[in-house]
Image 1 (cartoon, one colour):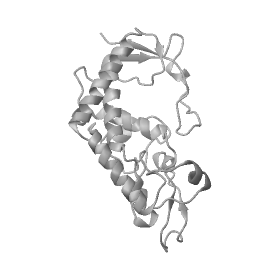
Image 2 (cartoon, helix red, strand yellow):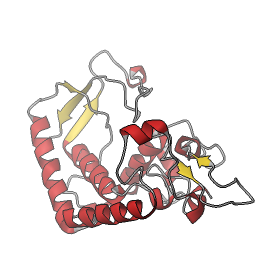
Image 3 (tube, helix red, strand yellow):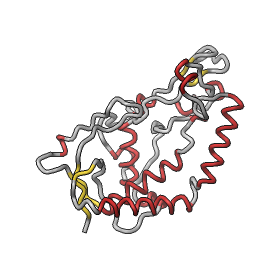
Image 4 (cartoon, helix red, strand yellow):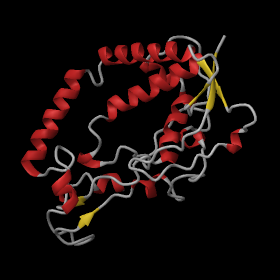
Length: 244
């Protein structure tokens, strides 16, 4: 429902707010023909960069390889890493996400629970909509409320990858999952972000086992985010051990 509402033309523009007027510009905060032109230009450049193409996937895989090689040099010392699951042992490709439903579910559930950007870009109605609000009303989608909605999620305040798995263990999409926002103002780089998240996450899990440092249990790790924009994890240490 929320995704449908914010896809309507009546809520596409961004309201004038003083701090935005003085501090921010570009495709996120512009309106009208200017926004359409910048959005078209941004998407064109993202596609030229390789978003959604095999060449971009190969580059991400190459970068993830360099990352794992660098992490191997630490030989078990503590790093600021927050991943603790295992995937298969062979080289990962982006298409493998279809065959790794649990890995995909863990990534989605991490995004849902973390709610890194609790709110999306403010919208403003362009014409009167009798059922909802008068023209000019500022509408701010509270993404966190959807991602933690008790009517949409079985365990909204817990880490529960089964939210994205059916009874047969297959990955399922959820309409209430919208960490990249919704409508025409959805994040332009969503496709690239999804590819990077999967490939880096899975590649790290292929090569390393992550545990709390000696004397610290998993329950001792504070997962409460820092109140920044975007929300960030608290700094803490984990031990990263190369798999043999």
